[in-house]
Length: 234
Image (cartoon, rainbow, N blue to C red; front, side, top):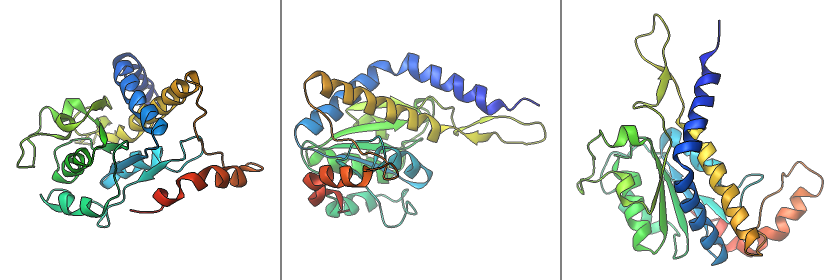
């Protein structure tokens, strides 16, 4: 029996390539400008969207000045208004930073309030969301807007409403959520293009090497020292 996951993923990647090129270009420009101006690239996702946030931050082949915003409750209160506003009082987001917010539905108050407060602090906001889902969903925030409406750039993960995209006989619900896969592709495409932009401008971006290759740890430590004061806070 053919495993439909592979064709589904290939189809989604093709869709990202054809529909998100301009959005990736705009997001990459924000990344490049942030890094040029001493900013940090920060990412937040609640629940399973934490996987997407970790794709940007502190990983081999990724930019060094990155930080995953980790909310202590792990998203347990993402649907309660005011949690994000209170949480952001303790989060070190500054002008020249870019905050990448990942939310498939884009309707919950927590990421919406992180977006609002990040913009108040002078940061740019990139939202990664399912546009098919979010335009059909009513915001749970009193502002009446979903996450994408607060973003400077929106990257559409192109998954269907509900995230799961495959059907099996005998199962009354779809299976196999795809948003983590497409989010990872969007982030890596943006990182690649941002690095390309910086190199075209004569700037060598600070990129992590794998800790598991010879000399990788020492290489990373030397580059990381310049950003240490900001990388190890909430």
